Length: 97
Image (cartoon, rainbow, N blue to C red; front, side, top):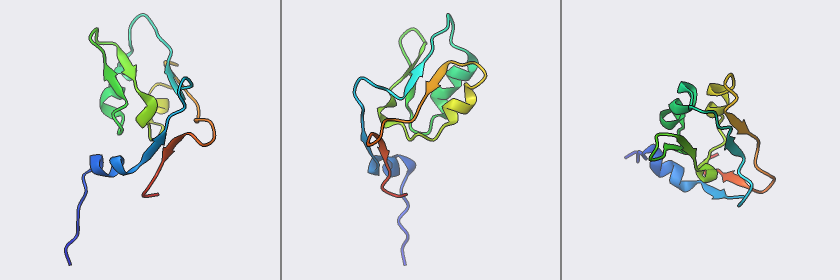
């Protein structure tokens, strides 16, 4: 029996997201300079929601968010992330549980 192995990106593509336009469930509370914790989210976020803009500041595109929470934990002490669950019916819809 042959086992098919999927890459994480292929598995994430199977999920569906219902974006609540104009009401993101994650926001960045800006400081003069992004903390090392906030910058680390660029590599920590499994869905790749955090990126650096042309000025090196951290940006978020929450429409692919898996609502897994590492950003909440990493930035808890700095207060740079404001995170809440999406309104009912919005957010990630997992295909594989």
